[in-house]
Image (cartoon, rainbow, N blue to C red; front, side):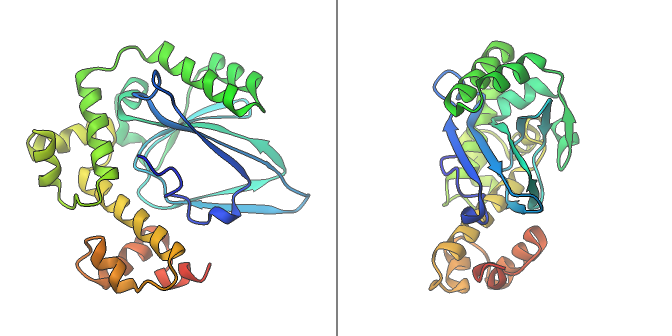
Length: 253
């Protein structure tokens, strides 16, 4: 997960927003920490649509610590007033420690009883670097050593979400030297989504980024380069997951 801006559909609408790498010790547990801060005038709203990575997020906001599961569609956060949040994009090895059933958390969330994490992050803010360090320290102290299955699950997600040439689950299984069935079971146990869904999410994130950043590129060309059967399949992905067409997205709708 090397491109932390890829899932942001409208980067220019973001409030103050930082993403901080997890660092060597915490990197098997989190890809990065993300920290928005906002201060809006009375009556002003900031809508933030996100096409998230197929991963869970552990988030400290206010007096709450919440574990959010992977998503099957774009989500939207509406910001009002002033505030901040500090979240960790979790790797599968960390999610397996926090829940035994990641599939139950898909498109859902659950409160986590972690007052020490909440207090450490709250004390560190608004120093973003210190807040991320406090979060990383808490993860490494509580999660324990990464298991062999956790390492394999981390490698699976990294491969599926970063290798643009990878279009079939069979190819991913071969690269990881496991059977397709083993890969499917691993994804269910550690992410909650099937490997094919992760590949589709990566392609749609890449397509959205291309549509946004290259106004001259044809939609048919983008579809072909990213492995879609044709432009119609790309259009269907946009409508199903994002709720609007690529053309509407291109003009900032």
